Image (cartoon, rainbow, N blue to C red; front, side, top):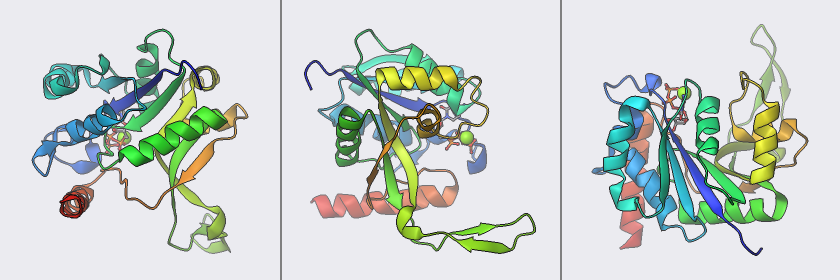
Length: 233
Ligand code: CTP
Ligand code: MG
């Protein structure tokens, strides 16, 4: 496609309450580098990304600007988020420059994202209008009733767990945001696109791209990173 302009919106305005640490997840170190530096660094390296908007907590904007200074060449803005992920995504979208044709929204708390995943999702969004990183589910998934009893076993071959990045054409995301209202029930960006009738293409991948939520996720990410670094040398 000619004249594409693809921007990443990296969400890092959360409080990390489930981590229970005295600093936010974006500041925590993973093999010696902050989580947010690893996440933004991978988007910076990716040829298919033309620019980046980082969304942070108001009290961490200075930290983010300093921490990400080596990626300044691609960072268009570092802006304050809101009290929900939805509000933060909206703030990031509002900070895009003119002429953006596609966006890739990503959780700052997924520092193990790879260039390959980003490229595959952006490419699929350019073809289909909307796409998401997703991973097969290896557990057998059950639907339970209000009393906790299993009522159904779902067909695992038709299920995927949605992750980020999630990428959209600018027009689709603008429409999805508008019709989401206050975003009360929104847990990911795909949902908003689905709600306006868009078919989101799921790019299935079994490359680990975990969201760091608890301390054990941080340890797991640390382990995975060491394994990747070993495999690279
Ligand atoms: N996020 C955001 N603005 C918010 C809430 C979340 O930008 N108001 C971002 C987080 O920084 C994170 C991503 O959305 O990169 C996914 O959110 P989550 O993993 O829930 O992170 P936190 O909200 O920080 O953690 P917790 O829910 O445990 O407080
Ligand atoms: Mg949260």
